[in-house]
Amino acid sequence: VVYLDNAATTFPKPESVIREVTRCLREYGGNPGRSSHRLALKAAEAVYACRCAVCEEFGGEPENVVFTSGATAALNLALKSFAQKAAHDCERPHILISCIEHNSVRRPTAALAQNGCGFSVFDLPCEVCHPKVILAAMENSLTENTRIIAVTHASNICGITLPIAEIGEFCRRRGLYLIVDASQSAGRLDINIDEMKIDALCCPGHKSLYGIQGAGFVLFSKRCASPDFWDGITFCEGGSGVMSLETDMPRELPEHFEAGTLPTPAIAALRSGLRFIKGAKQELREREYAVIRRMRYMLMNTPHVTVYAPKFDSSPILLFNIDGLPSSEVSSRLDKYGICTRSGFHCAPTAHELLGTGEYGAVRVSCSAFNSPADADALYKCVKGILR
Amino acid sequence: MGQNNNNTNRCFISLPSVTYVMKAERLLSDRMIRSEVVRGDSRRSQGCGFGLRLDCRDADAAVRILRNAGISAHVKEI
Image (cartoon, rainbow over all chains, first blue to last red; front, side, top):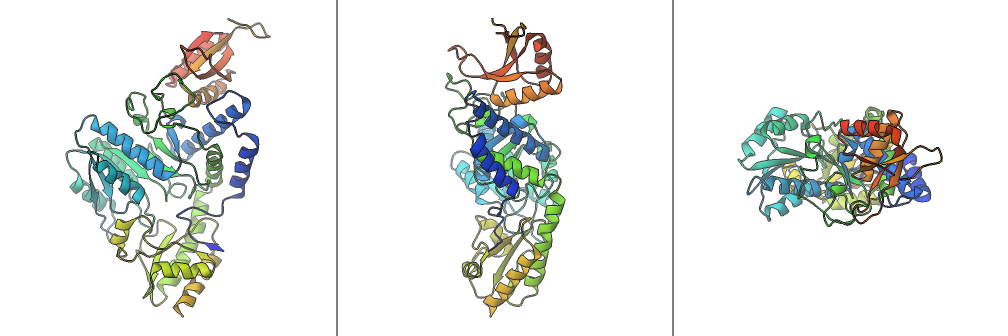
C-alpha cells in the first residue's frame, strides 16, 4: 500500500511512538490527576511531560496546554470560550474567518452565529497572497463588534499558508483574540505563540506531530491564562480530580477546561511524536517536499490532468483532477492499485470554491516523512494507467 | 503535626491542581529543594487536592520560589 492521505492522519507512525503507547498501556495506565497511587502519579507525570514538550515546540507555558480529543474539539473549545468572553463586553460579538477554513472552524462559527454572534468570511485573493493583501482583506471585513479572528495556518487542500505572525500583530494592535488552526502546519512549519501573538493555537496530535488519534490540544497565550480571565466561562463540566466538593470547575488552566479522564496513551504518543520531530523538522520537511514536488512535476506534465494552485507549495499537499472523471472515481481506482488518497471536498467547501473545484471536488494527495520518491512514481504510473 | 524518620518536621504545600504540582516539583528540584507529590487531606473543608511534601526547613524558600513563578502556594506543617 502507498499511503498518500497524510493530511487526514499520518500513517505509518514512528516505531518510537508505537513503543511508547505500548509502554503506557503496560506500565503506567493509571488515571492522571485523580488518585495518588504510583500508577496514577506516573500517568500524571507523563501528561505533564507532554505539556512541556508542546511548549518546547510552540512556546507558552505547560499549564496553558489544554488537552482535547483533537483539533476539532480544540477549535470548538477556543471559539466558543472566546465568544463567551467577548460577549461580556459586546452584545453581539463578531468573528472573522478566512475563506479557506475547514469545517472545524466554519461550523462552530456558524453555530455561534445562531446563538447571538455575528461572523463573516474574508476572501483570499488566490493569485496574490502577499501578507499586505491578506491584511487589507481582513481590515475591510472588520466591524466595530469584531473580537475574534480564527484562521488556519495552512490549507488542508493545497499549499496555501496564511501569514500568522503578521495576522497576530494585526490582531494585537486592534485588541482582537487570534485563534489559529494548525492542523496542517504543526510539526512542519515553525510556530511560536509568543512571537506570533497567537491567543489559542489548536492542534491535532495525530497528523504531522505523529501521535495517534485521540489527543489534540489548545495552547493558550499567557494573556488568556489567568483564572480571572475565564471566570464564569466553561466549555464542558465534570470531574477534574481537585475541588471535588465544589459544583464549579477549578478556576486555573488547564483543569478549568479539562473535565473528565484524559487519554493518557494518546498524550504519551503525542509526546513521543514531538520527540520524533524535535531537531529533525527541516529534514523531515525536505523529505516530504521532495516527494510532493516530484508528483507535482509529473502530474502537471500529464495531459488531461489538472493540478490546482501549483504555485503554492508551503505544504506537502497536492490537489488534482483527471478530465471527465469524478474525483471519487479516480480515488477509488487508485485504491484498487493500492494507493490511498482522498476525494471530494475535504470538509473545506469554500477553499474548493477558491480553487475552482467547488462543483465537483478533487483528489487530494498528501505526504508525510515516511513517503519516498518511489511513491510519487507509483502514483504517476497509476494515473497513467487510469488515463489509458 | 507529625515527624518523619529523620526527626525533621514535614510540611505540605497545597497547589491548585496536579499540573501545578508537577510544575512546582520541577521548579523546586531545579533549585535543589527535594519534595514529593502527595494527595492532600481529604477533609470536607478542603475537598480533593494535590500538593508537595517537603522538609519544613525548605518551606519558606519553596513558597517564595513558587510565588515568584506566579504559582499560588500555601504551606502548613503536617
